[in-house]
Image (cartoon, rainbow, N blue to C red; front, side, top):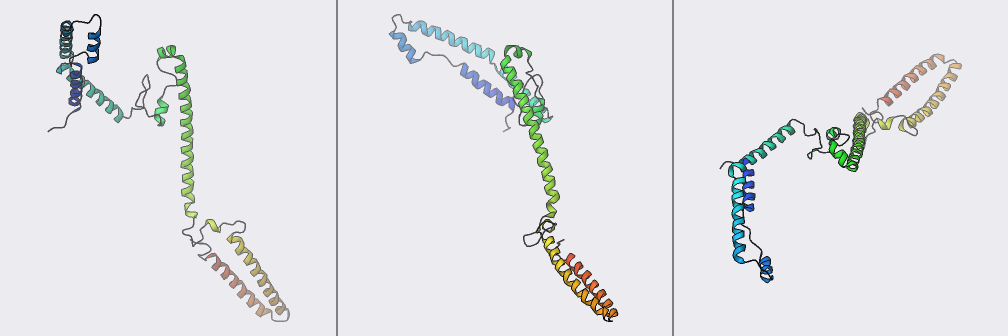
Length: 251
């Protein structure tokens, strides 16, 4: 069995509603009881004849106005309206406002807000309902300002996300290693503590150098020169090892 089409579904709905309108009319029991209790009740025969004539006129009207050809035509018009609306949405024109504000507009979208006219597009309504037109203009103005603020917040969020992505490599790889951020020069930071250690080491080295200088004064100048070269090489090697230490400066 083929799937029902939009025209067939709409035609079935219109036919069902037309059949409801063509149902014969009948007075309610309460009305009949009130008529019998009245001082001048309507004769039952006259009432039945009038109802028969009225129901016949209703049935004739429904047959002429809601004929199958007419209901089919209305169903096709509805289907055509659905098709045009679908094509317009597919083309991306659902946010466009031509002489009015569409019910399908999503006022949470920037495009729909920008498409709203600043004042009510109907000049007749402007004259007939000035307070409503003024409230509409104020609402559109406030909506436009809120939309601009939302765009600013979106731009700020995107900027912060880019900054976060840029500094992400500076974070520690895990909790057991020091990242680049932890090795930046700061008060009481690791680099400052290491420099303090180097200052004490340099003081000790200076004392040793002074002792070597005293030895040179007593006639062992050549040996002192050799020891100074060795000391300088050892100092350079210590600094290089410190800078290459992966625990201090992880790659």
